[in-house]
Image 1 (cartoon, each protein chain N blue to C red):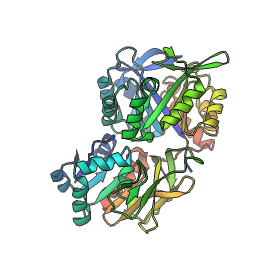
Image 2: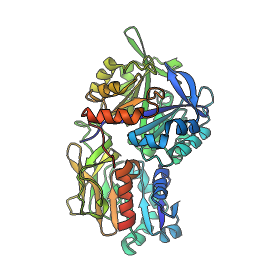
Image 3: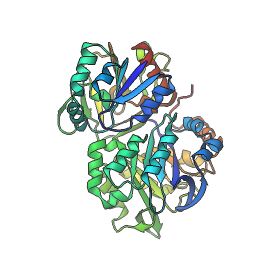
Image 4: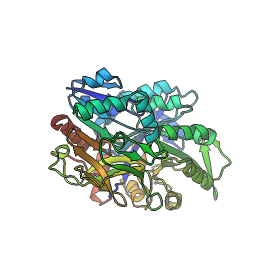
Amino acid sequence: MKIVIVDYGMGNLKSISSAMIYLGVSEVKISSDYDELNSADKIILPGVGSFGKAMKEIKERKLDDHLKELVIEKKKPLLGICLGMQLLGLSSTEDGLNEGLGFVNAEVTKFDTVRMKVPHVGFNQVKVNTELRLYKNVPQNADFYFTHSYKMLSAASINQCTCDYNGEFIASFELDNIAGVQYHPELSQHNGLALLKNFLNSF
Amino acid sequence: MLRKRIIFSLIYNDGFFMQSRNFRLQKVGDLHWLEKNYGFRGIAFSLDELVVINATRGNKDISKFASMITALVDDVFIPITAGGGIRSVENAELLFRSGADKILLNTTLHENKDLVRELIRIYGSQSIVGCLDYKRTGDEIKVYIKDGSESIETSFNDYLLGLEALGIGEIYLNSIDKDGTGFGYDFEEIKKVAASIKQPLIIAGGAGNENHLIEGLKIPGVSAVATANLFNFIGNGLPNARKKILDSGENIACWEK
């Protein structure tokens, strides 16, 4: 299996790539090249950083067009992680109002900084729906590692599982060939490795 | 419910890991030693996070430090914060590329606020941990930079407010007086800070056994307890401590298979 981790010049991609190798993936590439993405069996869109800057980097590399073609038209499986999940939504209020890739009907807004410590950082429990493909063999209320100041919400039904931090927000969703997780599975010990394995096997 | 965290801090000095006491460093061993005597990749499964601090006196050689990070993080699936000597966007980028999930800033917070703003703009607040080293002299608390070698004029409270205004994601509060003593955290000061700041608070300096960690975790407003004490938590020290802390009912993550 070939996995391509989308490189748009931001953040730590090493943990995800070593998790893939740990799980026995034969070929792992970190790239923003169209041919690499096109030859991937599955794509991972990671993300550390701010939404506005990330979208700018993505557009500069024409990754918005490439991903639309490969993921929406050709139905290649895609997993968005953390900011990578948020980028799949319609918009975010980070760095002013910015448009996302729009693959999923969801919006990103900031946590309430008055009542809660922000960023929301550390392990928190996800209300796992074990019937979903992402959560096979993952226990109920499993702990996953989060670090983010913005949260995704959706009025639509996108098979979301939620986490609570002064109100529920989307911890993960899965829709056809697209999945997103707000937490970092590559930094979430056994639970995270199980999640990644499910993405590799069931998408 | 958001869990509290147990963090191990590795103090690095020119290729070796150190035991620090009041910021005086004593050589313990290199990465090979750490793996051999500590079974580090196994131990990492009882930690929530790892902080690696480049405390090298003199030239910090970030490239060499970054190579060590790369070797360290293979098969360690927990968040890594790395820092010490970051003076440019390129330094930060190198550490992120080498496997750091967050970076730790200290001297730069005082000396180059423009760089701090730039790093936050690029990587987001959640990727930046502000390290605050402090020392008590009588009733006065002074903030120290440059590996604890130089105090600054800004008051402790103003400094904390400044870090919040800058948009620093988390605060790593480290007592130089308590560092490496094993006598327990500076609970008095920690309680005041925990009640006042808006960001997540990591406390460091003084933990010598699991009871200190538990006492720290019980303070409302403390998000994480850190220890850099290689000697006190060697071998099965950390897995055992984690088990005792879980058994004591503290709110930490559970991920045993």
